[in-house]
Image (cartoon, rainbow, N blue to C red; front, side, top):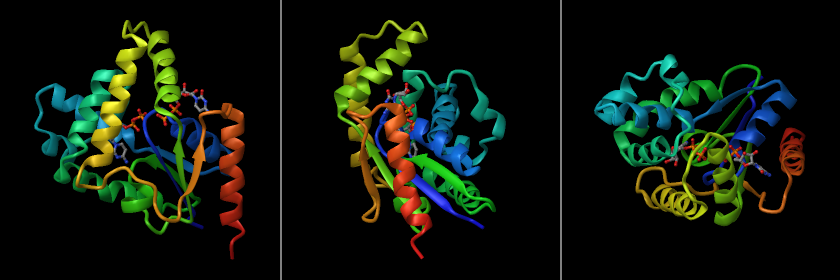
Length: 204
Ligand code: CDP
Ligand code: CDP
């Protein structure tokens, strides 16, 4: 049985954490679609033209070690505004979504563009300050010297670029359930997500 769960939302809202836990809970496969754009962004920083990078993306590009840096995050959101880059990544994501056994995809446009027919859609969000604090702590753990203010400015800049682009902008699908994790622990956020998905699993 194919059952697709679409999880969208802005940077550091908790999409990845929730998606991994939901996938483990149901025994579904999980695709972090941000990694595709990060891998294209990383190749652009290496001098490869972004559309070509997207068209020739290989599985091993997703395993590059630098994909979680803030430079790559910014590059990812720049290449993600190029329609040809997005187009080159559609088939892979749709095939993943419909695989037997169920799939969880997280990103920005999963519920709106990649899988408008997904059985369950969540839009996970949190205040910019809370999200920047989370990212700041993660980056500090990796030895980054960026200040909280710099991380906050970058998160806001990337969110604005993602929400305002013409091609597949970040937005909640009309039938998505909103989960605000600003005041939720990780465990509570995961429980809230599973509770909503359970309603969809028993919908018919
Ligand atoms: O995938 P996305 O960028 O939306 O966020 P994430 O990587 O799942 O979460 C970003 C950080 O926030 C991680 O360090 C999580 O552990 C943390 N987090 C949290 O503190 N509270 C939550 N309710 C959700 C995530
Ligand atoms: O982990 P975080 O939420 O900070 O970022 P990400 O999910 O890894 O996504 C990095 C960038 O890729 C985003 O800022 C978007 O510009 C882009 N992206 C997108 O356009 N569409 C997606 N489905 C996923 C990511």
